[in-house]
Image (cartoon, rainbow, N blue to C red; front, side, top):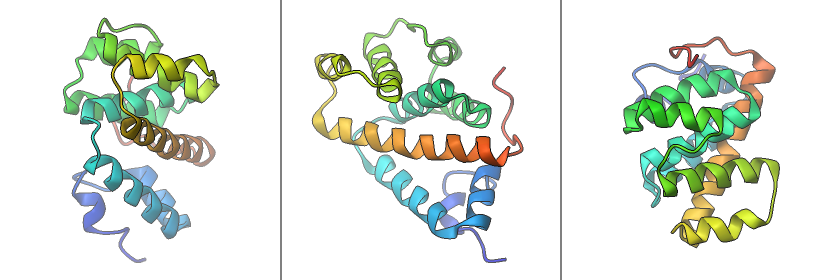
Length: 160
């Protein structure tokens, strides 16, 4: 078996996460596309906290236990306080107006509503950041759906 995009994954993880291993074994081009999208996000204007907020909010809204666990840990590593992580997972305000607007906007994108666009701009997110938020949503929905279909074995600490 060919390596799974080698250094592109190990730059962000000490081992290959089960979801990437499974996606790469089934469709290497899909894994490459996900890693390309992740690189765009990493080079963008959103902070790691913002990206993990997006991914955690979407994962909780779509019911992907694997991604909730992964992004709870990655959110903690990015500097999100445990109480904030819990609030994002529960769909409750965390007490940070900008982070709450971001999590609410993302949940709204996943469930669709037009009122959220004005609110996210009022909170201070730029059009460029809205593009990056949309990309983060697309990437995490893909992995959420894949993990649910694949029943990917959890290799992160449980988020419960």
